[in-house]
Length: 150
Image 1 (cartoon, rainbow, N blue to C red):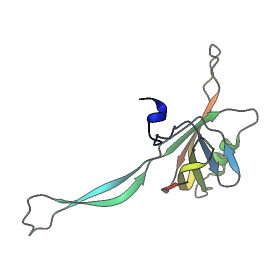
Image 2: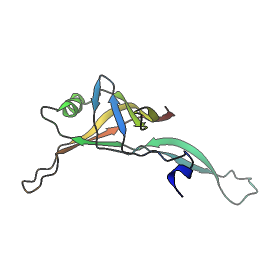
Image 3: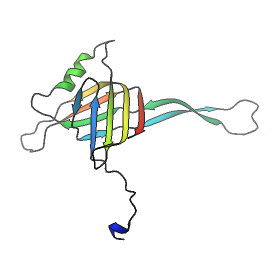
Image 4: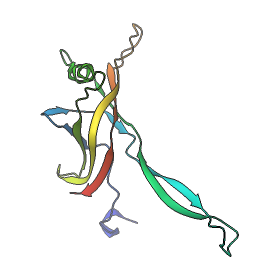
């Protein structure tokens, strides 16, 4: 079918996105993963139930750690600095907003991480035989994931 005969409903491409961290920290990331939630399932059966199976009920929600990867740029160590601010009983928590953009650069889907803090920062690997870009990784633990449109 020719493109002009198709409807206007297309899935959004996943390559155009923006990440903002409270406090003015904004970076261009290459990859974001871990935007998912899960719920524990609690099984219960009371003793006088005539049904010979357990009832399944939703329990506590769980959120995956979110992994962000970006190029290592000259004099850019802000994620290591944020990570180093976290010490025993002192955690600098921030709101992190991840926006999937449309072709006009407008928000289509927005994921908001609540009370996020760096769990792991990983510098690039070094290899004298490679011409790949230097990539650093930031892994965030958080306490909630909200998903909204636009």
